Amino acid sequence: MEDQNQEQVITPEVISNDALSTIVKADIDIQIATAKQYPRSLTKFMKEVERIGSITQTVAESCTYGLPRKQKNEMTGRWEVKVIQGPSVRLAEIVVSSYGNIRSGARIVGNDGKHITAQGFCHDLETNSFYAVEYKRKITDKNGRTYSEDMQTVTGNAACKIAFRNAVFTVIPAALITESYEKIKEVAKGDAKTLEARRTTAVKFFVDRGVKEKRIFDFLQVEGIKDIDLDKLAELSAMKAALVNQEATTVEDLFPEPDNKEKADKTNGKTLDLMEGAKKKKEEPKTESK
Image (cartoon, rainbow, N blue to C red; front, top):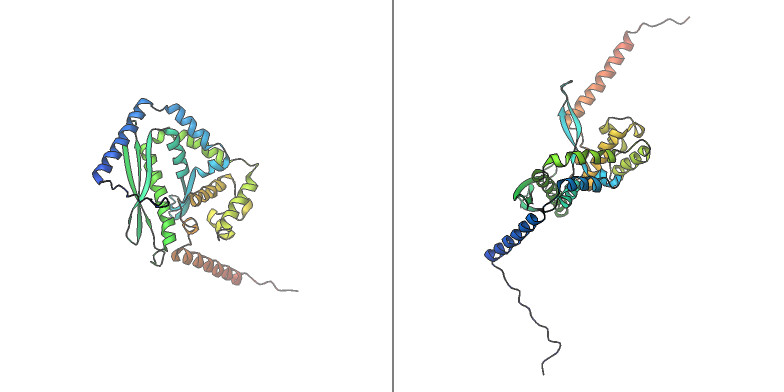
């Protein structure tokens, strides 16, 4: 009598590369045929992006990323740090889900010990327009030391998100998104009624992650929290979204320490001011007391 408890051994079937390619091709062909049968409505798409993106202020804030970048001031000729804002990976996800008839994603394709390379792709099944983009992210610190495995994973995820975002916004025409995006940004910006509570929350978010308040205020070029207006809050919220969405890896990416030259310029400036003040004080005529 056979043992009823005897385990059955299942041998997995090995599929060759050629067979796998045939399966994938057939799957894509079916998706293209379905897309042709049920074409999208661009009017409905634009309304849906705006509806989802502005459903709450929190969702609206997540649709914009902000990263510091050096730009040359044409008036003064000096380089200044400005917050560059743009549509985030969260908005890309909303756009993909609303657009329909599309394949998209991202994966890691390389790691040479110094950089991680991610590839994002987007395939419009209706027009058969396909685009793949690669994005590199450094995995070494300022001293040249390679990140830990966990930090490399975080960096890889960030690279994938950016590659995915870039691919999506290359295939899907920007003209279809611009109007909805501007309306979403207005919702994210809010009004003066909620300004005080929201700016306190935004500053606390970064303080809890080790950024000193003074560093935040210096970056925003304000004296204190009460000087953070709606525009400055929009910058801070975009930077917060970049960190949460992993479009920025660390807070150091958002609040970089000034380089040695900038520190030297500030120190020299303060020294010159002190010397000038002492010189003026020395030159002032003394008044005789009666």
